[in-house]
Image (cartoon, rainbow, N blue to C red; front, top):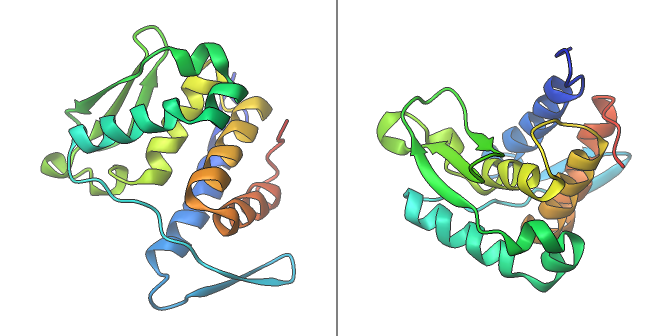
Length: 165
């Protein structure tokens, strides 16, 4: 448990389950969750920071995203390369997403699931991983990666004990 952000590790765990399913979808194209067999979707992979920036700009321009968080969606988010490969992060003060690139070993971060996580911080208005963040992340995954991804993430969040607003 992280002090001040008690859901953080549980959310990472749930997202890790979905990422692992996606990464192994060629071997295991179906997953079972809540008694249902679900086709495992794929998420987008990005080659460079410019591609991530274009994607973030496109997501913020979507009508349903603008309706969900009008003030946040109206504020541009800058995407920059991060020097270290250990994590991606959202800087609230600078409205900036920092992602490690392939060059520094950040292949794991140059994917839609990670970018949506960081963008959910922007749209939910902060760095904490509370119920509002979890709901925003879930809505982004469902709306952009697909209903199956949303279902699998919801199941993983529930299994991890994450509260969703």
